[in-house]
Length: 199
Image (cartoon, rainbow, N blue to C red; front, side, top):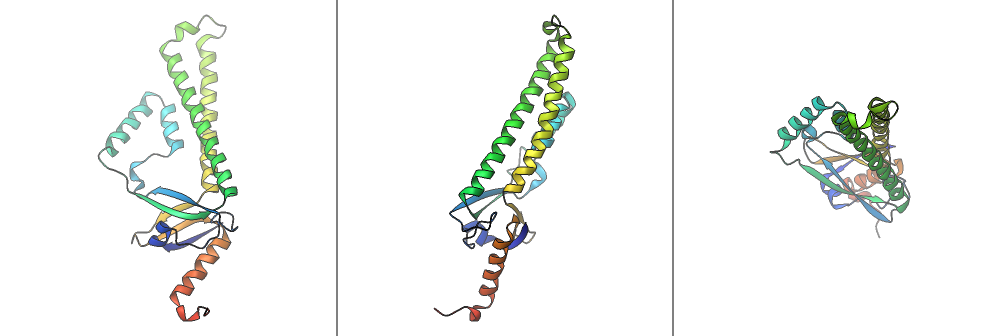
């Protein structure tokens, strides 16, 4: 995979070569990518789940993070990149897996919370609350690890966006080399219009 830098207006308006940014095949659609430009106020999904697993201490940390960022609206950048149906199928599957694993982790953490609040009702079974707590903790840990891997996978099948400090350029991250070459060829043509073939 490659990275390529484009003018922010071209990225926002989708003025890019009609080559899929991920597969390099002829594009048959568009992918809308929205990125938070100011990343200081957010918490990534794996870190959010880890804070949930830490129990009351993690919950207090989440509350502090939420209160610290509540007064600000995060600045977002939305760009359009050429895309194909095949790339979209892979992206949707990766996102479904991530959502499933996040849901599993949240359910396991909620189960741990319930067991912690009411261990007496489960003590009648052999092993009682400790055995159930171990199972739920294992499920939460597996879900957390799986969600981290799934989050990485989503990043691999989509396109990352990074706005530079001047706010004039956007770097498209993880694009196909053919797409990057087409973008660079178009940029060279735009800089040297005399080199363009006459119709």
